[in-house]
Length: 73
Image (cartoon, rainbow, N blue to C red; front, side, top):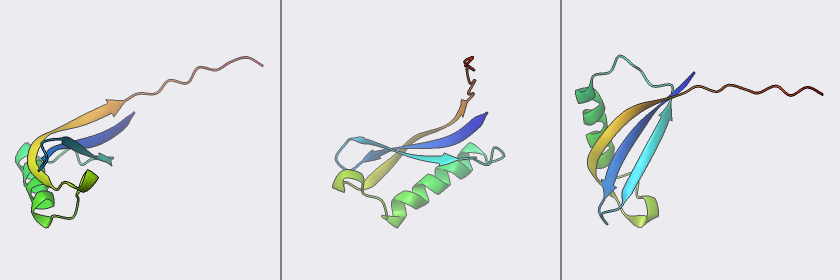
């Protein structure tokens, strides 16, 4: 199974933005994730589409299970 942490933000133009990180540390508390998101906003490093990140909207861990289908020759 693959897991990723999705950090969802609202930008200064009101649109949504998402940062997706593979293999998250599952031991982190929600408050720690929120603090990290607030630090990302404060760093002002990301401006997707020219609009800065403004609000930490939500975060979630997404688990994907992949099952390959084998075809015979």
